[in-house]
Structure formats: structure tokens, C-alpha cells
Amino acid sequence: MKYQGFPDFDHGSAPRVGVLMTNLGTPDAPTKEALKPYLKQFLSDPRVVEVPRLIWWLILNGIILNTRPKRSAEGYQEVWTDRGSPLLYHLQDQVAGVEKRIADRWGDPVMVRGAMRYGNPSIPSVLQEMFSAGVQRLVVLPLYPHYGGPTTGSTFDALAEDMQQRRWLPDLRFISCYHDDPGYIEAVAASVRDHWQHHPKADKLVFSYHGMPLRYLNEGDPYHCQCHKTTRLVAEALGLASEEYVTTFQSRFGREEWLKPYTDMTLKELPAQGVKSLQILCPGFSADCLETIEEIGMENRDYFMESGGERYEYIPCLNAEAQHLDVLTNMIERELLGWTSPRYDPAQTAALADALRS
Ligand SMILES: C=CC1=C(C)c2cc3[nH]c(cc4nc(cc5[nH]c(cc1n2)c(C)c5CCC(=O)O)C(CCC(=O)O)=C4C)c(C)c3C=C
Ligand SMILES: [Fe+2]
Ligand SMILES: [Fe+2]
Image 1 (cartoon, rainbow, N blue to C red):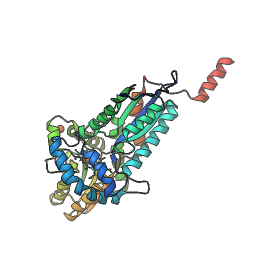
Image 2: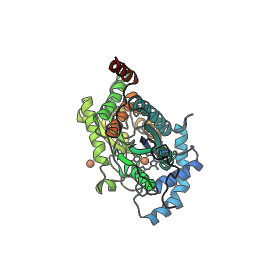
Image 3: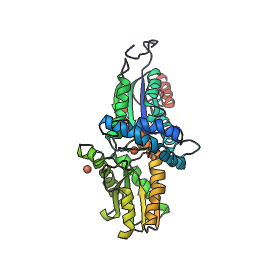
Image 4: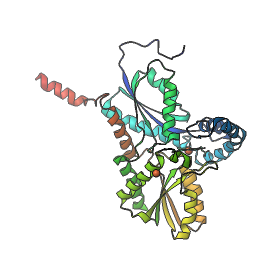
């Protein structure tokens, strides 16, 4: 059978609206055995590594997958919790929070689920669950504020690849970015203001975003511009002058030139320029993960302090903070309009019925 369907579909059953929230992915355990298949899936994606396939296959299987899993597993061990990987439990909390908000306003026809682009729960397995439950209209929200081919673009590929196998396709709405959404900007600014309530302002506020090869920007990826726009809008909301903040790019991988300035190099240079205290945030990540907790919270702290820095504070991601959940829900609700309507409050409906009867 070429196309997968639901032969036992009950014609006439009520169609449902679904919301799928996705993030990048994470290994099932912080071990080199679990890292190897995870990194293989991730790094085999041509959206992530744009290198001719045969050359990359040799490098990936001959070198990277023999060395990187052990090193990455050590990093994951530093951040692993009782609930597993932070990226996964934050996604679970974000989904639960949005689900509750949507259920309160829209009722049962809307089904909210979370999935990971790589690893588990996989996008195909969650789509199968949603379509089996009768979802015929689907809103997809990749939890990346900034559009990037390796992240958002790749998420769309995974959806498309799944749907190429299906007989009955849903209506589809895909939120490709929200880097300048006023609610998101305000939530990021509020997280900084909140931090300033308990810690005096530092010499510099560093906005650190995940990097990508410079080549992707030169070939038209909007990610770099969107990151700079977020920084500008948050800085405006905070009333910062241009010398009070800087945008940097982290998590370089491989030998190619990536977006600059690099976070690690910048932090090593700042103390010599008179910056002794800094606060750093990662607005490109909707949830804390290896790249923020370990790389920014630990590794880069050491670089700054060893180079003469005196105070270093990491401001956490928005995670499942109430304001963030409101922002995500608002974005989704804008997409739901026209597909379904907010349900009536049952008490109000009963009162109206009583009033009509009397
Ligand atoms: C190899 C190239 C990579 C590109 C390009 C890239 C882009 C990119 N990534 C994120 C967000 C995340 N990356 C995460 C982990 C991660 N990223 C890479 C490589 C590239 N990323 C690797 C090899 C890894 C795995 C960890 C490691 O071995 O170092 C994560 C998840 C972290 C977790 O806790 O599980 C996120 C999130 C963005 C936003 C982005 C560019 C737009
Ligand atoms: Fe990455
Ligand atoms: Fe740009």
C-alpha cells in the first residue's frame, strides 16, 4: 500500500483541530550509546550540514560519530535531571501549559501535542496519534523564534516527508517565526527586568544566539537578521544604549566560518575592554538545554572569569513561565481563528437559555 490511511474511519465523526509544538530534539539518555543514533539522525540532515552527501557521509561516519558521542554525552550528563533532558521536560511543560489555556477557551476539539525533530517523541509518531484521533486541521509551531533553514526549515521537511506517505492530508498552518512578535519581545524584556530586580545591572548585556555557517546567511537564510532584530527590539524595550549590549553567536561546530562575533571569543575579550560584569541571555532558545545550561551557564562563564571578569550571570530562557505560555497561546490562537471558535462559557450559556425560556 503506497499511501497510509485509516480504513476503519467512521465517516461523519467530528473533525478535530490539532496543535503541534516542536523543538529540536535530544538523546534518550546521556550516554555515548544513546548519543550516537541521535547525532547520526541530526547530523545526516542536509538542512543542518550543507556539504556534498558523499564527502559528508565519510566525515560523519568515519570521524565524527566515533568521537563526538562521548564528548556530547559528558555535556548531557552535566545537565540531565530526574525528569530527563531539560529540553524535553520544558517542552512537556510548555505543551501542558498551552493545552490548559486552549482547553479553557476553545474546549475539547483542539488537541495539543509536542514532538521533537530528532529523537523522541518523533514527529511521525505524534502525527499518527493526532490523525488517529481525528485531527483534520493542524497548526504547527516550531519553538524557534527565529527562522533558520537548519531548524524551522528542517521541521517543515519532517512534516512534508510524513505527509507524503499519507492518503488524507490535513489543512495546515505553519508558524515560521516570531522573532519580532510584541508579546515575545516583551516577555524577553520582562525576564531581564526581573533579573535586575535581584541583581544590579551589569556592565554589558550579552544576547547570545545559536550560530550557523556564515555561508547560509550569504545564501539567503534570514536567521542572522532576525536575531539582530530581536536584540534591537528587546534593547529598545529595556531603554539600553548601544554600548550597553552586544549580539553574539555560540555553539560553533566544525572548521568553517560561522556567524560572528563568536560568543566565546567575545567573552574572552570583554574584560580587557573594561567589562568586568556581564549578564547573558539566549533569546533564540525557547527552552533551556545543553547549549544554554552547560555552554553558556558553565563553559563560557569560565572563559569570562579566567580572562579577568568579576561577575557573570546567566538569565534563563522563558521555558514554561506563565508569560511565555501566554505568548505562545496567543500566537496559536491567531491561527485557530476561522478554524474553530472559542467555546461559550457553559454557565453563561445556561443563564442565556434560562433567560430565553422565561
Ligand atoms: C552541525 C551544525 C549545527 C547547526 C547548523 C545548528 C543550528 C542550530 N541549532 C539550534 C538549536 C539547538 N542545537 C542543539 C544541539 C546541537 N546543535 C548541533 C549542531 C548544529 N546546530 C549539535 C551537534 C548539537 C548536539 C549537542 C552537541 O553535541 O553539542 C540543541 C539541543 C540541545 C539539547 O539540550 O538537547 C538546540 C536547541 C539552532 C537554534 C540552530 C540555528 C538556527
Ligand atoms: Fe544546534
Ligand atoms: Fe543580517
